[in-house]
Image (cartoon, rainbow, N blue to C red):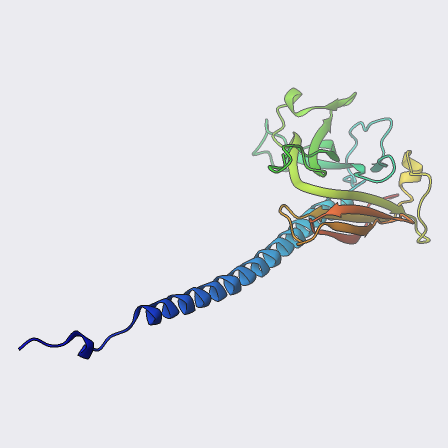
Length: 266
């Protein structure tokens, strides 16, 4: 005996459509929540990267500034006639300053590595931090980004001039080593023993030896867009009376540290 179709249990087409619509709404809600969490996570990571990169950069600068002017007591090697432990070159207006740090060091004589007592060679080095326009290209505009890259170089005094790495066998020398990119500002402010800003910037040995503190500001820009809306955002500079303004979606954060000189004027 055949069964009647209208006595079979199941779901209708309308019920199926309702189930599909509910599933789509749930999936859209889940995707929206995931997207919001992912964006927040990316922002946290970007901020953490900027902070970590800035701290690493500041730490490197502080270590080098603290050694400026150092010389061993028994070092009788010839120093440059224009020896200046810390020489700061201000960028026009606002931007990236340049700093040159000179100090003495010694190494064991490679010709007598096993001599007792050890024989040392005394050398004078100069470390240079300078900014150049970043070579990173923005994929959206196909133009270079509006930021700087910081490069570090190290030279040796040969008795008459500064020796470049290509002219020396010293493995400690290097030129234009990239330290960090996406830099917005790098500013150095020399401070004397009375806590006053030194203006004009010291250019001689006697004036440079009066520097007791160097205030450093490093500001970095996020690699990707951080904010949803593009709007004008002010950014205060170290030692400047007015703000600098940027109109884009990028995050900018600044780190300010005071580096105390230990060997100046000894």
